[in-house]
Image (cartoon, rainbow, N blue to C red):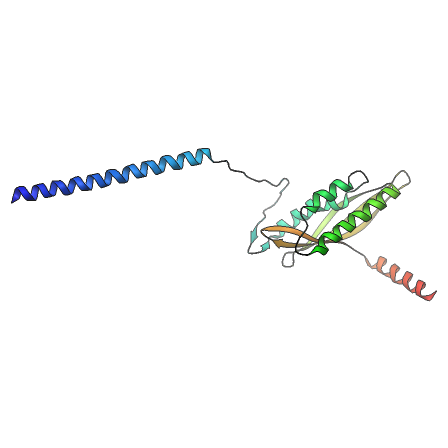
Length: 202
């Protein structure tokens, strides 16, 4: 009787030993495979140059810093122009225009087409120096205030205060530019209204 119990215990221990051995071998194999995967993996880390502050995205929204950094990246492409680089700047920014509606791309294309004609005609070059940014994180709108320096070939140089509004859209995990417009100041609006009245009076 005791002999049968002893044999049963030995067989049980042998089965347990074999099971633990099998589990150990499987764990070793999975560790080896994981190590090979880590060593062979080609990981890409995308770094955006010039980020000077913390940025984040969350549930379709973005941080104020993200909007500021994106705007500061787009403004030179839109405003630092001369006849030689307009086509390059246009091509560079077209990749970041919202595709949700055709009108967004058409407006930016029209803007660059007008610039190309005007800048070539007058030998014009411009440079925008940003003074401050007003950020509306909720509506994804940034207003850039600064000074726009314009050079008309060899004929003249002018600097004036200017403000521009950039409207964005969060699509597919990316911040896309929807609209870019110049905000007219009070004097400009009054001058345009006066010109319109004079024209209608005639």
